[in-house]
Length: 367
Ligand SMILES: Cc1cc2nc3c(=O)[nH]c(=O)nc-3n(C[C@H](O)[C@H](O)[C@H](O)COP(=O)(O)OP(=O)(O)OC[C@H]3O[C@@H](n4cnc5c(N)ncnc54)[C@H](O)[C@@H]3O)c2cc1C
Image (cartoon, rainbow, N blue to C red):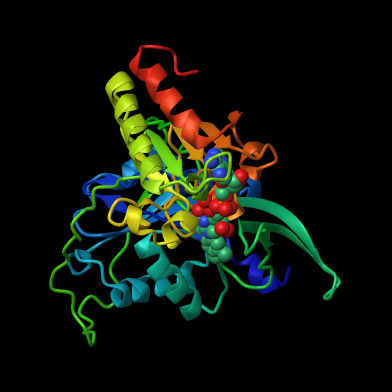
């Protein structure tokens, strides 16, 4: 590694808040950063920006940060990328983190590429895993020691490992739902530093006057305890006869209601992208992009995930493979979804669903 790169130290994570707390996703980010920092033998530094940050920094320490940098200023009360980026870029130039990880949330996806451009480094987006390894580059005939390796779904069925050996910080975004937060340890001690805002009176060509939340849709996949997902397998039954996918949707709704009634678990309907993109008029308004699970939809990690008539393409799997229990129902015994299913069931969704609902409603175990 070149001398200049040796100046870069520590793993930084960009923390986000939800009201007066760290967001749930930020706890995952701290766990991801902790893993990388431990493997590198470096410190984990949380960075949080905004106004009236309260004791969010203390919580970040409890969840694994060794140090927290707080940038707290009235001018940061409303998120505004240009302002935030100026501050981030000056902190990175001054303090030289070795790695800087963001969440692949709307804010993370806005900040990370802008910052990478400003500080002239690379960025690997949407990672589902991070590792630390040595990397031998055959063209350069050089081994790069202790790199953060960024792992993300590629097109088709591949997973890409991305090595960015020659620039610092190594920057990444991680998809929520792929890292399990650590247990909070409120006795952990960490350094909390409040830094002054760089150029507090700087005038920008735009100002943010107000931020309004979009009205929430009825589907909240992220927080669901059970997800019942349908795929293109709902278009035909086991004999190949075309079926009205509305029938499968109604059965999935009945299963959702039966689970909620019986176990009190918040249940949502999910879908594969192929089913949504088929734009079937029978499902109009019932299954929309909001229901999509996967790489370009929502990442979920419920207690139970039902994959019904879903083949298990990589882009679907990366959005649900961290579910605690996966029940997969498919006619094809070789369907890739069975590789990750805890309960692989070779069956027709049109037979499985009524039977499952009947068992739950009649007080059976549902097993
Ligand atoms: C860049 C990119 C991003 C993508 N993002 C996503 C994403 O976010 N989410 C996503 O889901 N996909 C995504 N995809 C698409 C993905 O590659 C697959 O095409 C899609 O997941 C397939 O959906 P499916 O499993 O419903 O359909 P299919 O692959 O057609 O599978 C249908 C399955 O149903 C089974 N089946 C048929 N009839 C029955 C029956 N009666 N009972 C039981 N089983 C039956 C079949 O054996 C088959 O396995 C993306 C693709 C790309 C290129």
